[in-house]
Amino acid sequence: MKNQSFLTFLIFLAISATLWLFVKLSEDYTTQVVFRMQFDEVPANKWLSSPEQTAKLSLTTDGFHTLRYKMMREHKRVVNVSLAEVPYRQEKGNTYSFSSLYVTERVAELLNVNATDLTMNDAMVYFNMDPLKSKVVPVELLSDIRPQRQYGVYGIPVLEPSSITIYGPVDVIDTLKSVSTQRLHKSNVSESFTETVPLDLLGGTIRSEVTAVSAKVQVEKFTETDVAVLIAQPDNVHVRFFPEAVTVKCLIAIKDYPNLTPDLFRVEVDKAQLKDLQPLLDVKLTSWPQYVQVLNTTPEKVEYLIVQ
Image (cartoon, rainbow, N blue to C red; front, side, top):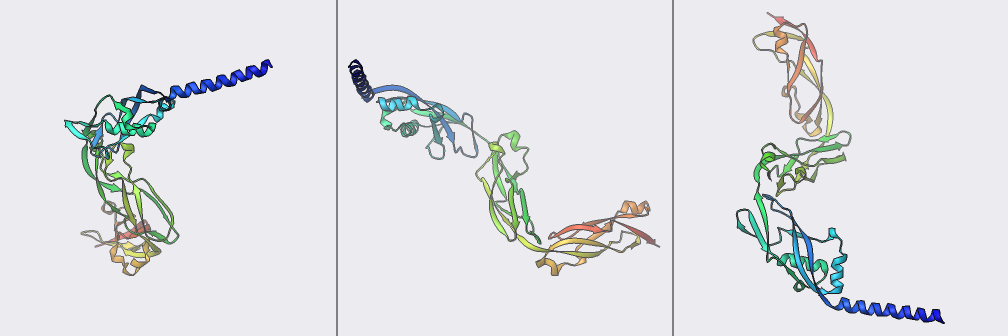
């Protein structure tokens, strides 16, 4: 009997405590809430000296929503301020401002309360943006393109845009001659393609309104061929070479093969070695068509006879 009475007491105590807590949480409270403001989508030609600020607000609401804030973890008490969205204005010099109502509305969404329940201590939010140095630089494609057997990349990939305007600190911008893409990986390629490739902006050290380029890569079927090229005569002296021609082994797109002729290549000997009357002369391929990929030349050295 005593145990039953004690159990009944505990049940009534729990009900009373619950009702008391419900009544207390139904009442309105005013408390200070603190959120971090993180700025993003900063204009490419500006540098935000303080990308993070603190917003202090007064929250007047019932205990349930107050408890919601108290239980919110620190890393979630963040308001993202998009400078592409918020209507800010320039005050003086590099100082800008916008209405604190923007932050109030974002906090209200996070706490699931009405914006009228919140009052920000300051009517305006101020922040500083410094101008960055700009420079137009070419874009370079980094790629690892592996075509199928008998296929190859034809010519130089076309980038659009081929140059961009970058912004950044003076000491960084002055040293940059170009901007590279992130590496484009393609394998088993047998036809031309166009790919959007992100730019490497050095982890945010530099900025650009362009963050990716279009790379147009032409792929053709290639064939391997040998071209016999006569060794060019040096100036002011007549020389017979043994052999008289060098074999150039190269890859060429099948569509260009009908236009391939030996006169498109030029092979010369080392003139300094000839002047010193060395017994063998090094042979060097000095020019060839851009659409040809040279694999090797043979022989690498030739004998010769100066004809008087």
